[in-house]
Length: 286
Image (cartoon, rainbow, N blue to C red; front, side):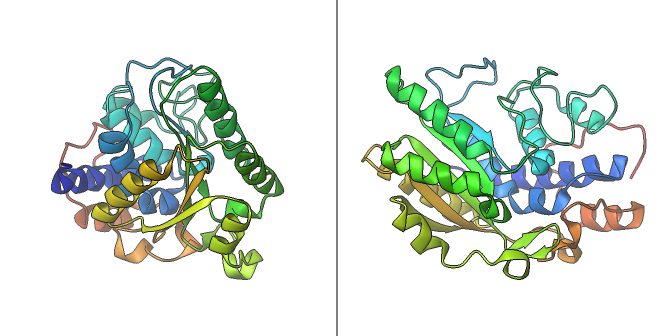
């Protein structure tokens, strides 16, 4: 049985890492990263069968693809905290010659990163290819992917959604970060997404819902998704999250989509988040 309290403690540290990474370079995307901290923590510390002794092919292990690559701070934090690379390297986020670029890339050779994901709309297509390869090779492990809700405005995503159902790619579990926000404002104002459940179902997917900011629900719904996989249909989880979750003045608004906190705001944010695993060292005190 999962230790929910411990996972919540880890998620708090991950949120601290997000605030500190983006503050120290005054750039990055903290809002969506904070909202997805519980999902990433559950995925890497409980759900996936993965190996921090990284190999690119990922044979005989679960693999994850981040399509909305701008939320790299949460991805980097969880990879470091689960042993893929030293936690101290988080201090190099967005620095020149760093392996931790603003959007994940592969040419720096950062363990845990299998695709470059800066341009939106492409991650699901890649995840499909890997899921199909696993089926062809008799690999029973699962492919996971995360997309943003604003990303669903991209046409390529719907081509991939149609392809997955037609080819019965049932070893694929996709989560949609459904926070209702994107860089220019609420999704309902930029380009309304309509009835997402009906859309995914009409394309032939098994559809689940979950509160992505409630650890117990993340664990239970992800377990349900795994139970429903392998039955002929790909599975999607419409994951309701609160952009900026965990920090009161950042929550529920698109204004922190791509904006870092200043010194005073950083102190405020960190005062709301428990330090549980130890902050990584940096040459500036907060």
